[in-house]
Length: 175
Image (cartoon, rainbow, N blue to C red; front, side, top):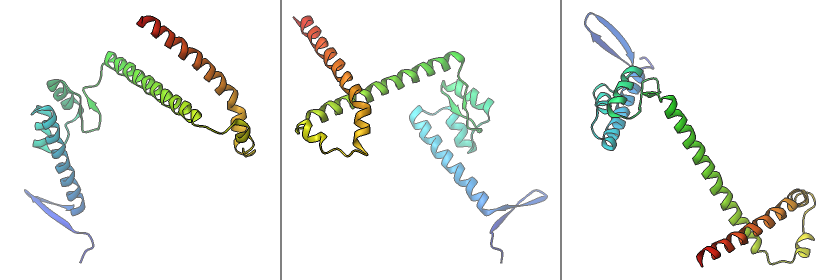
């Protein structure tokens, strides 16, 4: 008995042996693609792209995908994995600017969160500085503090000045 199972498909005059594993993988892939097509249709309504996926069980080539994408006014995935139709240079520029804006906003939010945590953590220290400094480990703590303390103090001073200037401006505008 053979270790590998196979099916024999007979079509017309010629016969071909197709390994069972390959056929099972293709069937599973087609089933998963049809499930994705039903999901796509549920989210976007019945459309030519989902109809194609459901009918044929594979993605269209680039040209066909671009046409289907234009018909439904969406970018769709082609058989080679690309999204079609391709973006125009203007659309790429808008997408790039949007991504840069989102990255800057994300960075700003991260910086604000770090500042809030740092100020809160510093405000919770109840020990006097002399007691804290005498308990530092020279090999681990001293270099970190030596390198960053002046920068941190300068930043906190600038932050304090700006914070109170901003609050004064907000109170002057409220009167």
